[in-house]
Image (tube, rainbow over all chains, first blue to last red; front, side, top):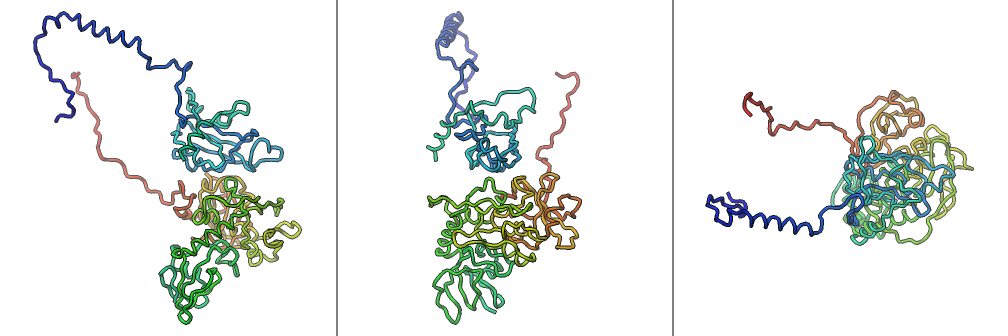
Length: 178
Length: 326
């Protein structure tokens, strides 16, 4: 059965005098090598250089804060129930008096953990979130030596107040789609 | 024995049966949704208007249709009556408006509400409501009232179904709470903030169709769909002792009464069973409670465990390498 028409029939014919010299073949081969020296490189010098990400790239998660720096997440559990890999767990707690500047609603996530090894980066958590709290970003999950370090808690996931994670590009891309 | 036809299905029922009861006898395909009606509470129903149906033929003797949509929980059947529920566009339209009215002042704080996942208003609005609100007005808010250490009252979520008032009247002796004020200002409260302290007061939590009355001992402990309901019973001198235990891991987070397919409590339980017995040792476990597969609680909920068949398509035999051969 013939699958493609690229197969070459090998013929045991005698080489001509020119072919026996080998020199033209070597020159032709070198020409190809030299041509590639002047071409654009296919690789990047990571991490000094990075590639441009698609606006909807699904990388490491971030737990957002609102404009006043309060955490958006209310531990409603919709991300955890929508997660097909069951990577998200959380424990809720009630906001006490004096914590109004930390958490936006009456209830907040006391612990919020994502097992990055289980996560398949499908983005369903982001889609399920009713509070605009969780987003996948274009950041990459750093490599680690032990499995335990891949269980990311709130210390890694919540964005720092002074170093906000920009998700405006992502939000815009989604708005056009819908 | 009057014969009634609901959505094209005829049933013969006893005298004095309401349309709602007759529809429930036929099955959930024709039963109108309810919010304020509760089969175990006398004189409940008639407040929420979600069970409105269209009576296209009054009776055999008087075949004229009823001029307005009727509340099926309060309308008795008559011989030869013909009722349209899900087949009537008028009813579907009216129900959509009723849901809109019920949600007019509802805060929609489902992400922080403990009732989310088993809330009847959530189901109702999901099935009948529109996705967007049309009101621009501020939703009404209330001063927080503490009605005791066991029950949490969120007046903003209340839809004024009066079920809890009926429970207090009919199940407990001496009601200390009720509905104050009128119309848009109505609210549930206790008399001079008197704490509700009665052996059967906890049943108000179970009958509340929304998250207005919730268990304070369960407050923010877990979302309902992360807990696993188990049927259990114990010998109780005050009540039947038949309950659902809601487990998270080994821990009993909450004890509630058992609910039937309409979301109404089968047997009322006492506060000792509800709030004080939260060890597995206090109970005789009967088995997992049945959860309808449409409910979010059924996520990862296994009632019967069947071991998957072993995969035997290609039986792999170990390869033996002869000595001497490379």
